[in-house]
Length: 265
Image (cartoon, rainbow, N blue to C red):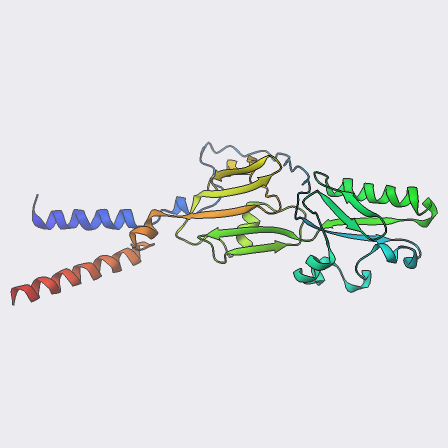
């Protein structure tokens, strides 16, 4: 093999290994490639059960607002959760303490650990009707999480703790809210760390595979931690695209040529 052929082969191998393939960048690919149209399947999303340190917003209404004003920590006219700051929700909401309780004016401590939001709503409503009001008062109780909170780190546009004012959030929505995965982020190795009553679980999912939508980790739970690993191309320091790779190769060759000429002088 001639010297020119060897150099060409070396440049070609650097070019190929440094570029990021398109298949590593596209979400939800049908990797079976059978061409069969997929039927729409029902998405099973289990209701979230409250844990310690969760913050919930509780609003109680009646025909006469004065009757229930003592039970509310905030003025209902101050706006919805979307119109209030996260700081206000933190201080005005009800935090689940280490014993799984929240403290509501007049009602006192109510245990909500492991309950769904609907179960908490019914629990408060039944307590009010059994102790303080009759059915004619038309008590209306609303219980919501004070924002869907998660933390994301790694190769994304914006890291940190994020809050979405939705009841259900999937991992793609969470990543989009964080500015998407960067071109050097590994979409095939996205790690979800989840705190459960039984302990911490960690699972790595492949977002380039359409079958990920069937994973129990595709739909997030509040307080999930998402970590996006970098691709090898980032640690190599080579170009992310073909043009960038060519520029890197030209720079290396220019440096090598300059060094060679200087040594010959």
